[in-house]
Image (cartoon, rainbow, N blue to C red; front, top):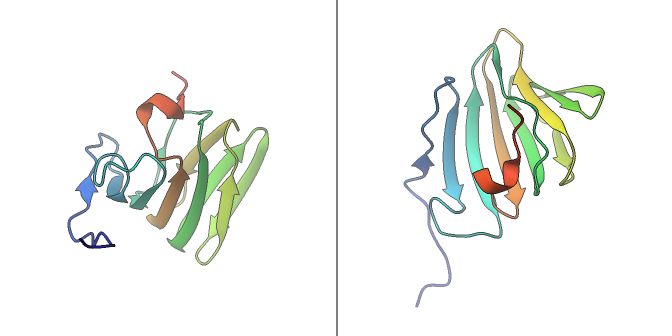
Length: 120
């Protein structure tokens, strides 16, 4: 029995906003509810509604910039920087900049639409 999972075919999450989401580990790919790891590319002008997730989310920026509105504070991360957002924190993610933002997102427990609590 193998003691590892080699991911060569991440699940590409269907989106309608131009964002690329490739889940390497998590509920959609490896049925892991403890953690999800995804490679993402947010196009220029992309944004999501505010949300209050029931998971911790770590983000590492590979290239470009990403804006975070955390509660009432605006933070901009650039390539080589990372952040951890605690669960039950109201946040909005966006890329209001002129270039794509490529990043890695890790959620514990794993990302789930049931846990993200997006606002309408």
